[in-house]
Image (cartoon, rainbow, N blue to C red):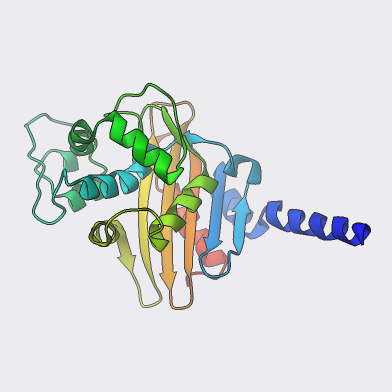
Length: 257
């Protein structure tokens, strides 16, 4: 009996930790260095490329805007429907930041100054409470409320991103239904006849190497698939790889056409 138990546990372990070569081929084809974790909501089936890196924590960058948006809405610091960020005229490097913004616009543009306005109202103490409550990533103390997701104070692994995404989708965190509804609408990135995509990019520029993220989930007719991809970014020209590698991998696994 013990012998068979050892064999069974070994087989389970090898299934869990084996790198998915189909996804690996997509990374290699695109000359991308990084990791990807994909997990089914219904069955728990998990595909991983670069299992060692999948557990490694990196600066979350703008992927934190997903949780930041939910926190801001639930705390009542910003109206997701009628609220507006008023641009003060400061010229930023990205043209999309140089105008007034709704919350949805700020999310899509990854508008740092907009989310820093929210952070000033939320404060470090409340952020720490929300992070601990969600058991999401790792935060170094003390931290600056307006920059912790950018400067590496808050780090998270691809595995942890997927775990968090699952909690968001299943609404397992103690937030109002209306807050979840608003976030879902803001997260919506694309719709096709076969699936709906909810996602967020991230670019950690203040760390070396720079890290690019793409996280979210795909709703199909039969399942929901959570994903988290992070890549080394050598130059801005590499940024499209975040979405390309992710979507090509989902296609290669037969999750989307």
